[in-house]
Length: 207
Image (cartoon, rainbow, N blue to C red; front, side, top):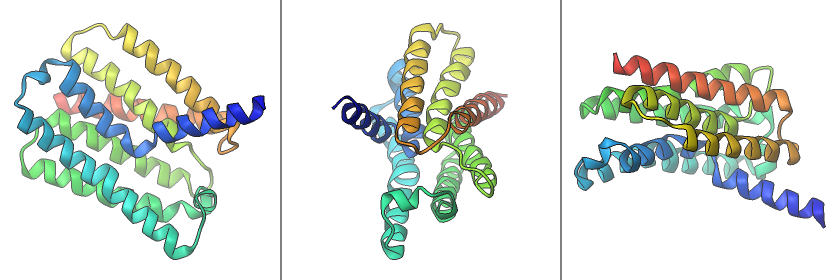
């Protein structure tokens, strides 16, 4: 009974923190908890809509259609050797998002968020040739990195949200191990990739 409860919690955590949602959570956080909340609601909804369509909706539809075409289950899709096409779909969608943000002259640090997500995906594609990295941890690592980067740029103390995100990161990483999707090394590597990419590209975009 206890094992079933742990597995259920692990599945819920894995669903709540799907890696594709990470860029969108960053923008929602920016528009709710920084001075960017003063921007017109129409503009905020416009930006979030672009991010949602190209980093969540299109990759989800593309990956789902590919899985159905191959007649794979969700478990089979998670196998390392089956992850190349989902990565390609995500890369194309993230690239399209970055191009559109450039065309509409969105703020550079907006583009930095998408660039961080794109580069972290590219790194995962390369590593996936011989090893499987936790993209869930890449996503939440990116959230922690983005929080740190924007706390530096906007001069605020992120201790409490930082602690909350670290706690959630630990729970999510444990969930991926409980579900036997990743090892501890894969979880930690994924978190590191997301964190470093977010910190580097958001800070560089401000310069």
